[in-house]
Amino acid sequence: LVSRKIKRTDTVIEIKGLTIGGEEKVIIAGPCAVETYEQTRAAAEKLKSLGVRLLRGGAYKPRTSPYDFQGLGEEGLQILRKVADELDMIVVSEIVSPNEMEMAHKYIDMIQIGARNMQNFELLKVAGEANIPIILKRGLAATLEEFLFAAEYVVSHGNSQVILCERGIRTYERATRNTLDISAVPILKNESHLPVLVDVSHSTGRKDIVVPTSKAALAAGADGIMVEHHPNPPVALCDAAQQLNPEEIENLCNQLKPFLR
Ligand code: PEP
Ligand code: MN
Image 1 (cartoon, rainbow, N blue to C red):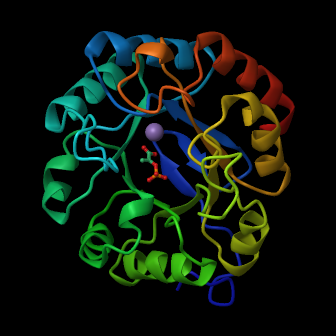
Image 2 (image 1 turned 90 degrees about the horizontal axis):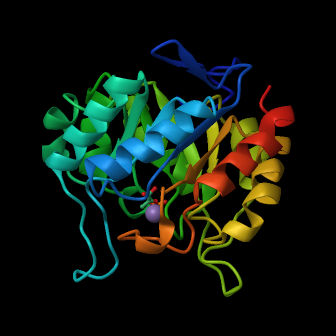
């Protein structure tokens, strides 16, 4: 069902007056994790001033170490919803368990399924039964075929609103956190009609190359990018090194202007 052979035209996902997968290219930005109302509001205000309406923020964080900050859970979603409503923004956030789906509808506009859960088939099935756009991230060591089969789980269970997100894969290279597989973008666009995004933060983990990697993603045909922004990255509770500060996100948005149509 996700194949171009079945449906030749691009799937365009509409959300609160915004489209993903159409003519327009989108930026999804926000902190790695929701930490406080003030932090979320500051990030959102900056993004709004730059014309970014899709606000991301993690409330359920799938952390590698059990001793790292795990996210605020439902309280984090409440903060995101409040800030988004105040500023007319759209909430993108991750859930990690099928049990969270029903509750998530109260707060989230687009549900993210993270790399570590790309093959959480029970979560994929529940996402397929929901009527809400899903951003599905590529697994850390998933082939494109496995990635598309994961998307197929969601679509075959009834939800055709799926957006694919390349977020880097595991390789031997240590110069970047993961290896951004830029060729995944045109391959996914050719093989599937679903929109494709690139997460330029988690794929490289380096903010010094976020401008060229974002340009490369859009030039390769991505429908948009995801990027982390924190009002004060040095004090961030997770992914401090890769989150863009206000000046850096402004520079990125300015540099991408010519690429956003
Ligand atoms: C995230 O976007 O917050 C995240 C954890 O990304 P990934 O699942 O790609 O690691
Ligand atoms: Mn992060």
